[in-house]
Length: 108
Image (cartoon, rainbow, N blue to C red; front, side, top):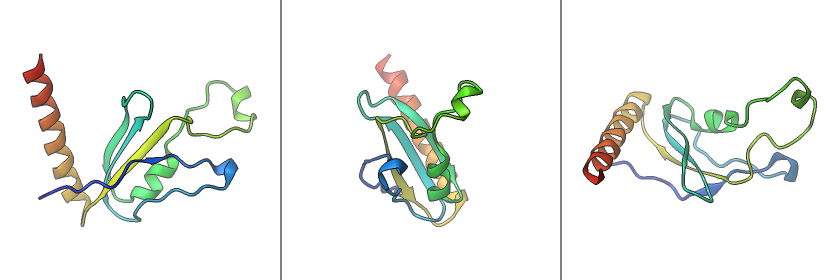
């Protein structure tokens, strides 16, 4: 099974009326910090669009619940890889994690 990733896209800002572009179906997603490339979130899910729309900063205090701000940090970007089923997405995710671990072990 070959995984084909889409292009990296900046996270949209709801305050500016921007919309999230992701398939409504199973697949893999990867979110990273744009400035550093550091991995922020990764997973295999049933609905890519729904999952990506829920990723954001957790509230830090009770006061922060009442302050209106963009829930997504400004420097995040995401990409997706659609699959036919969630099972196929999980298999692809496991293979990717295995390749990363092998790469890191070889580089150490």
